[in-house]
Image (tube, rainbow, N blue to C red; front, side, top):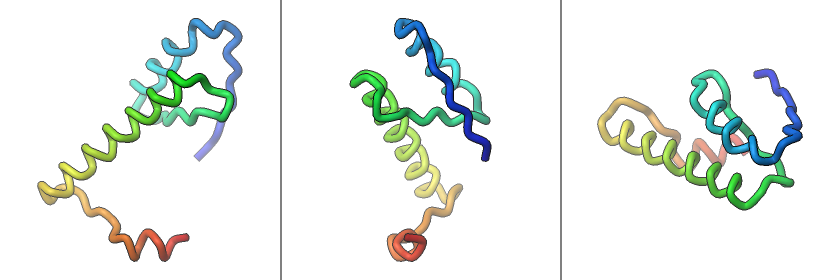
Length: 75
């Protein structure tokens, strides 16, 4: 994976840019510590939505999730 850092000069354009990135299936926006509360909440909402979709797919037998032990073994 390649990482790119972008500084957005006009703060009012940030939400538009994040929404644009979220609609690209090959891009995963990662917010930094300096992000506003709204941006962090939007990222949290996106993460929870993705997690919920993963759970639904797992329950339907369409996605295999890691067990807690597998997850902890990776740490």
